[in-house]
Structure formats: C-alpha cells, structure tokens
Length: 108
Image (tube, rainbow, N blue to C red; front, side, top):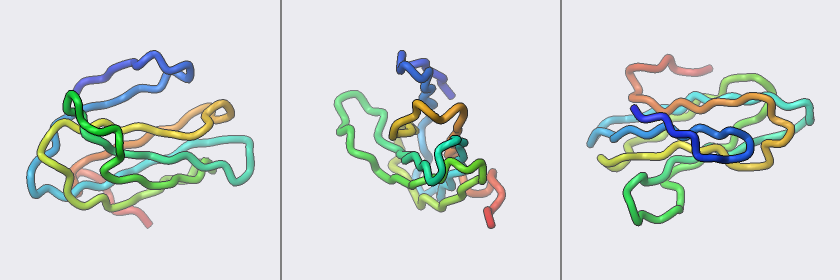
C-alpha cells in the first residue's frame, strides 16, 4: 500500500493498491461535522497513468460520526485511488477504507 500526501489544503491522503480480479470489495467510511446534514462523497477511480478521472463507484456518507458500509462489488484488477469529495472545510476528520469483503465486518 502506498500513502501519498497530495498537497490538498485539507491534508487529504490518497491510498493506492492494486485490486484483485474477481474479488468483492466493501467500503467502510465515516466523517464528522458540526453542520447538520453534511455529507461527503467517497469514490474509487483508476490509478493508471492517463486513466479517466471518472469514478468507478461512489457512495455518499453522512458526516454524523456513524460508519457507513457499502458493498462495492468487483473492481478492475489494477491500481485504484480512493478519494473524498465535497466541501471539507467544516469536516475535522473522516476516513474511507476499501478492502476485500472477507477482511471487513459487515455493517448494520
């Protein structure tokens, strides 16, 4: 796994790793905000050089401190980039983990 600081003003960190062919993936994500109803979008896109910036899959997460769990299905067998989008100025913390289904507990 490679961790890269991308210079984003909010110190956004991008994690990259090759997905495995035929593997099912889950996403666990959460964030907090003092703004009621605040949400962020978590996306996964190709990490290949020259690939489209279009997300392969996205999910909205409420910034209320609860963990959001989504099944993502399979991803292309290549490097993927996980990112959070939206106005993060009032989001003191957040995370998104994409991992093979067997390695993460199923959400509620």
